[in-house]
Length: 114
Image 1 (spheres, rainbow, N blue to C red):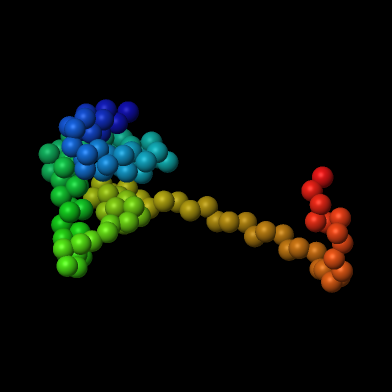
Image 2 (image 1 turned 135 degrees about the horizontal axis):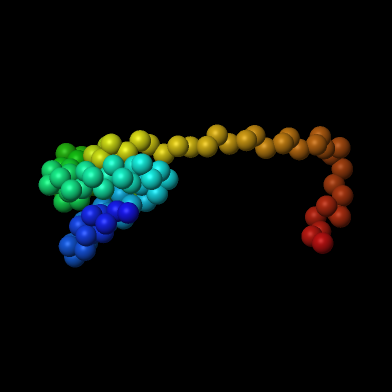
């Protein structure tokens, strides 16, 4: 799986390899996403190079005084949008049980680890 992704990443270009790594991690959660990306990568207009160019355009628009920092989260968002990968599915956190009410008295034995 993701043979085309691996092939394009072997171009030797570090930017393309970085985009490929982020794309690979975005596809890990769902095999259907990986298959869809693999098919998309076979089209020249959906190559890793084209995705990188989209990221570069975004950075150029946002730069100030010739500089711009693209966070990993923003880079992943651009890549997911380019290839049509849904956002991360965040599992709802279970609330932690409330601590028992304190009597206000400090027991030194509670501070010791056994």
